[in-house]
Image 1 (cartoon, rainbow, N blue to C red):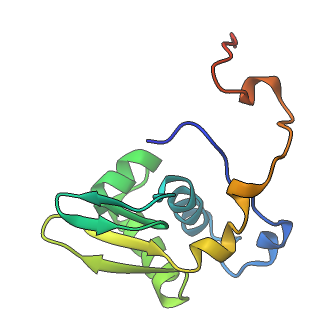
Image 2: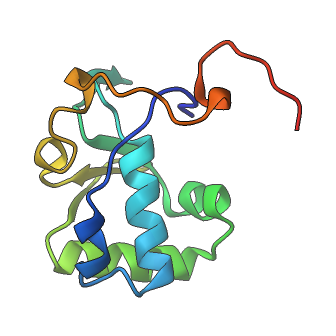
Length: 126
């Protein structure tokens, strides 16, 4: 899983229809954080920027949720158009719709990091 880099979210996300639904919000944020940020390929399947291949079980394990909670949250996101899902042989290809507009210009922004521990290759003890 990606551990470097960051995403920026607008404060207006607090007005989003799923903001007050904890599982749906967690799944959406997790998909934003774990979706490809560059085009790649997995077992011959192109996985584009804003997409991720996974199963319900993998998402459930990564977030400490039940498979049913993951299904319900993804269903919310699919119904409202935030994500789309394509079934593959052993997994699903999940696309965060409007990924580029949601995270527009993040790679081009040179923002100073607010906390020293965010600097890559700097060791800190907690």
